[in-house]
Image 1 (cartoon, helix red, strand yellow):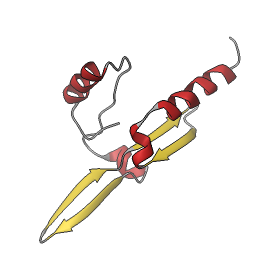
Image 2 (cartoon, one colour; image 1 turned 90 degrees about the vertical axis):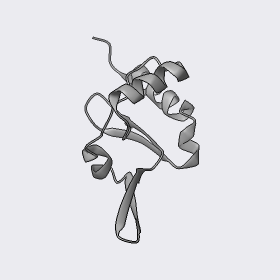
Image 3 (cartoon, rainbow, N blue to C red; image 1 turned 180 degrees about the horizontal axis):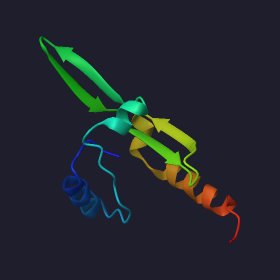
Image 4 (tube, rainbow, N blue to C red; image 1 turned 90 degrees about the horizontal axis):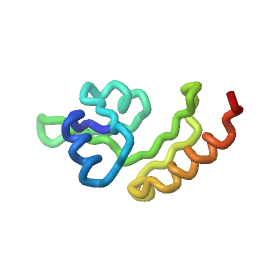
Length: 92
């Protein structure tokens, strides 16, 4: 999830070799609800940015994993969690 536009996310994904869709939250609704959107004031202006975070949400919409900060730059931990969750799903 990113503050960037869908087009910017698609360009980034292509450049980085990411094969899944990166979601855009330009209206900041999800980022605010997850507490990831932060702000700071400079004189009379407020600036906002999204903290770097990896959040794994299962198919039932339950948050299974959250990683914030510098370690969230590397998505391998979140990827491992996704793989683990996928293995736990019952066969249909």
